[in-house]
Image 1 (cartoon, rainbow, N blue to C red):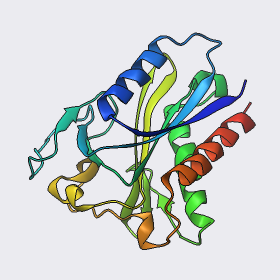
Image 2 (cartoon, helix red, strand yellow; image 1 turned 60 degrees about the vertical axis):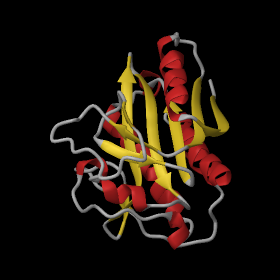
Image 3 (tube, rainbow, N blue to C red; image 1 turned 135 degrees about the horizontal axis):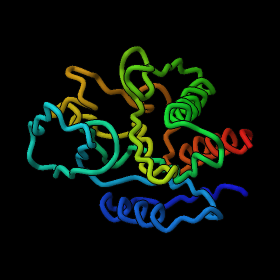
Amino acid sequence: MSINVKYLGVTPYESTWNKMKMFTSNRVDSTQDEIWITEHEAIYTLGLNRKDFKKPLRTDISVLPVDRGGKITYHGRGQLIIYPLIDLKRYQLTIRSFVTLIEKSIVSFLSRRDIKANAKIEAPGVYIEHKKIASLGLRIKNHASYHGLSMNIDMDLSPFEAIDPCGFKNLQMTQLKTFTNDVSIEAIGFEIANDIKHQLLNLK
């Protein structure tokens, strides 16, 4: 069984989240896995780890509590979003091994552009010289994943300054535009999503 990669264009965060939940709730053993590529309008999302949560320092961007792991982050235009809707049992994956697989796809993508990046066991995501370029937050329900990764491509990073990104005080964010002019959200989305897809299919 293959994996269907879909480019959705720019989508509203909340309705896309609801569609992910519906897709996951309606899954059966034979449901084909999907990977969605999208981009959202400006919004802060607050994961299930709400300990010591501080409201953003700006009030012009709404905050939406959601059911993924992690703390608060920001989504906006110019940021790539990839949602892998994957049956982890099908590939005999744990949550940690799946997170590592996704991080590997991002690090490999950057490496192909001669950008050195790394993941951190204690703080999921991908970093370039201690600045974060990609964040991960997943939800697993009945062995199936939803939510996913966000990668800063060519965006206004200032909304991150109003929060502690992913719960880390003084964490600086970076984006692909700083290192290359190769910033097509759709093309990059397909490249990373297809890498995730091929890694998964090679596990079977």
